Length: 207
Image (cartoon, rainbow, N blue to C red; front, side):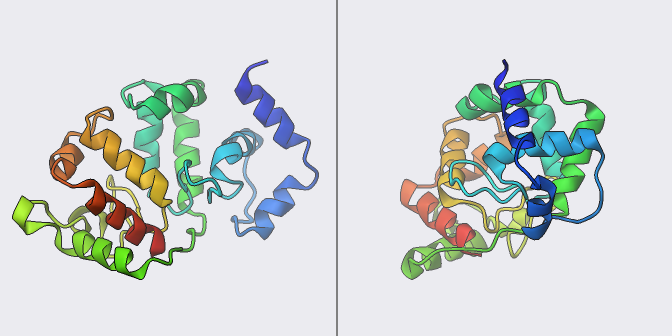
């Protein structure tokens, strides 16, 4: 049995799953069965409401629809080639139709965002400075320029606010090393130090 089928069947056996999803803050409007089944499969890693409890898997809730759609298409056509994409998302996205990709993107974009967490105030303050001002000495622009003043995301630029710091750090590393094909971001982050990446990730997780 394929893993995706196993996950879907396993989640389908949980009593009152839709009720739990609604109680957790997911929109109460009805969704078609195909979308519901796909959302249940995604929930194994990304949470029933798109708010992941595992720091290695990104939150999808409140992410911009255009970004989710673009990434799902990149997974499906295998143009996003970082190691985790190849190991997990290529296979998961391959059976998705164009229509389903659009429905998933719209669904997760409407979910309530994850709340920020964090306790290292000094690290968060350093990350806030990099996010808002960049690193002029290294000609690194402010992250807020593309991702929004509150990291809420803008069109093709993803929401970063409330995202898990370990996930953000890993993405910065694979983009910096060009394992993930993101030419614009590679140019922005190529001179960031690991300490600066840690700080930015901590700040973004906190808001």
